[in-house]
Image (cartoon, rainbow, N blue to C red; front, top):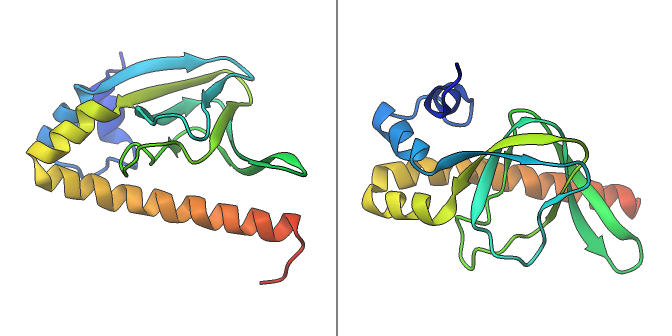
Length: 153
């Protein structure tokens, strides 16, 4: 039987995190499911969680006035959804729409921020790992916008 602790410990995002830090993360984690077409988050809403996608696909979208929703990246199994929970004002920067049934592990933002404040080593490790996620999302957005507007970098 898969436990949340084992799933988190073996996930590439949390790899090499100290065992006591994995235990702290498990205290903030829960299994969640979303249906096809359901929005996991909407731009501007409060970011109260982040997600480790276990199965299914999620389209990250931005809304444009003239073209409607624009997919900037599609996330799947093993990807992390959400970095907005970590950086004030804790508001989502994208819409996240399920392309099919999505199973994920949700990590509660308030719980995790509290644990990061209490253990700065954990906080620094989490911040370093999410820095990579932020850069990846910015790069995907840049490439998508260049493609949409047919601009050569």
